[in-house]
Length: 607
Ligand SMILES: Cc1cc2nc3c(=O)[nH]c(=O)nc-3n(C[C@H](O)[C@H](O)[C@H](O)COP(=O)(O)OP(=O)(O)OC[C@H]3O[C@@H](n4cnc5c(N)ncnc54)[C@H](O)[C@@H]3O)c2cc1C
Ligand SMILES: *[C@@H]1O[C@H](CO)[C@@H](O)[C@H](O)[C@H]1NC(C)=O
Ligand SMILES: *[C@@H]1O[C@H](CO)[C@@H](O)[C@H](O)[C@H]1NC(C)=O
Ligand SMILES: *[C@@H]1O[C@H](CO)[C@@H](O)[C@H](O)[C@H]1NC(C)=O
Ligand SMILES: *[C@@H]1O[C@H](CO)[C@@H](O)[C@H](O)[C@H]1NC(C)=O
Ligand SMILES: *[C@@H]1O[C@H](CO)[C@@H](O)[C@H](O)[C@H]1NC(C)=O
Ligand SMILES: *[C@@H]1O[C@H](CO)[C@@H](O)[C@H](O)[C@H]1NC(C)=O
Ligand SMILES: *[C@@H]1O[C@H](CO)[C@@H](O)[C@H](O)[C@H]1NC(C)=O
Ligand SMILES: *[C@@H]1O[C@H](CO)[C@@H](O)[C@H](O)[C@H]1NC(C)=O
Image (tube, rainbow, N blue to C red; front, side, top):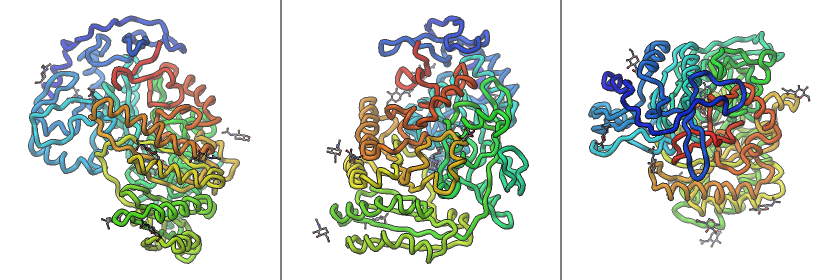
């Protein structure tokens, strides 16, 4: 396979009839490097300047790619969709290749639903909608396997120099660049049609200290992780310390702790206690769009440091390593709750129970309790797994949840519940949070409900939930407040939307739709997500906000709903640190003029 691909870099595949021209400086800012050229396209009645893709005459020559490959230590590969071994032929942008391999097909078929299997592939997307759901594992090798929106080439970076070479090559040749870590992204930001990927998952170093002597006026315990480290690895290392330590991570153990998570904010079971993962950051080592390795902390490049703490993934720089505060890990207790009327539906009972449950959102976060739940996955069901009491005994947590359980008894809704206690939160986390699967296709949206909204309009919020379930969607919920335990004097150290300091119930909404559904069906699903599903939540909770890592990127007025009053400063930072848009992730600061035109393919700037 390899040798066939090498011959495809001969340059003979330059098919483009595009008008290609040298442009002085269409983006403003410093003059682009001499080689930087734009491909001009017309789409839907407007003019666009686009990045260079395979087939365009500005696409680098085979010699250029081989020279890049040498610089990155031979770690450049032509990307194949994960399912390619199940097909006779992969029809890629660089030509056709025979790909069938029965053993590899069996292994990818078995592995496709596993998060960790997909994470270890260099350029897979765990939620497949934004790969265009192309070339999934199949039993019919004669079907067609195309690249869809998977990237074209990938650098599996092993050193800082490899990342620098990738950034420089993408900038100089005006290529679409995608940074990829674990591929968890719900918004399609770790894949991208025709792109060159820099995969940072190989950066797995971890170091621990009891006395952070660096910047930020902090001298307590801390962890430094390489860009690719996942939550379960970092937490395992911290738990092995005596006494055991803990850090803020997401609820999901497989998400990375130094890639998209801190750059979006990063909420989890510890958010009531310590805020977002971004709020606990002490330092990031990053490579900026100019290819330079920089230290960012409260003293050095402090503006960039602030932007990296919640200002949007893949917006300002590529993270190489991150340092965070760590904490003592106390006794913790978890309680589950199951209300399941899917076999004996009774809407009156069900919605009375949900009204009681959401009515306690403020009460739970005001008591430091985090709640992870799923609503409507099986029709009339609520699955809470779990209520988390960090530092709480069984008696303490049971006393806190008692008013809700009393209400459920009074309503007369059947439910089941379990309680477990652990000597650390880490043990609870490994035991009570459920594993998630990969390979599903859905559009995801979401909204976070303000405490004021619960206070004045709990009925309106529950009516929005009804609309969502009635319209074939369901929700994953998280009750937390990022201002409960973190002193208000530290809130502005991160660039997350300040509104997250006064919320209590964060929802992810899902609209299942196949990535290869007809275009009209995909457009209808997107409209439904934006206007019916998330529209209902926004109308019921005007004091809320949207979370950039778990939201509809096409939500109206995205600058305001993702970043609130921090947006103008983030926009200025983007202009300063990435003036020629080397990086791109949908709906992040400074991407207003950028669009993936031609049915989600070419990344272009309106001119
Ligand atoms: C099952 C599941 C559970 C989740 N649970 C939570 C949760 O509890 N809390 C929460 O806050 N979020 C949660 N998320 C959302 C999570 O925050 C995002 O998916 C996040 O973007 C994942 O980051 P990643 O680096 O692991 O993944 P990737 O998909 O590889 O990357 C995500 C984004 O970060 C960018 N990026 C990756 N690496 C780097 C780097 N080294 N430098 C610069 N940019 C980089 C990518 O370009 C992309 O834009 C969950 C997601 C899933 C799928
Ligand atoms: C890059 O070099 C390695 C090692 O020589 C080789 O195996 C690989 O095929 C090359 N990649 C490309 C895209 O040519
Ligand atoms: C690739 O294969 C497809 C399907 O067999 C065929 O239609 C197409 O012409 C081939 N392309 C090239 C470049 O050989
Ligand atoms: C993406 O999928 C749509 C169907 O949903 C299809 O029309 C389009 O050609 C696909 N594009 C690519 C690049 O695979
Ligand atoms: C809900 O009840 C149905 C039927 O009794 C059962 O099949 C399903 O597994 C239950 N779901 C949960 C999450 O307990
Ligand atoms: C729903 O439950 C309530 C309370 O038990 C009961 O009065 C009502 O008749 C039930 N409705 C249906 C449709 O079974
Ligand atoms: C309450 O929610 C409803 C939607 O369910 C909305 O129409 C109404 O405006 C909301 N009221 C307030 C005060 O926010
Ligand atoms: C969505 O839900 C609302 C409110 O329950 C309902 O009126 C509407 O018909 C639903 N729309 C669709 C497309 O199902
Ligand atoms: C946060 O606000 C305080 C008080 O207004 C100010 O002194 C400080 O510089 C701000 N910090 C940041 C990072 O903006």
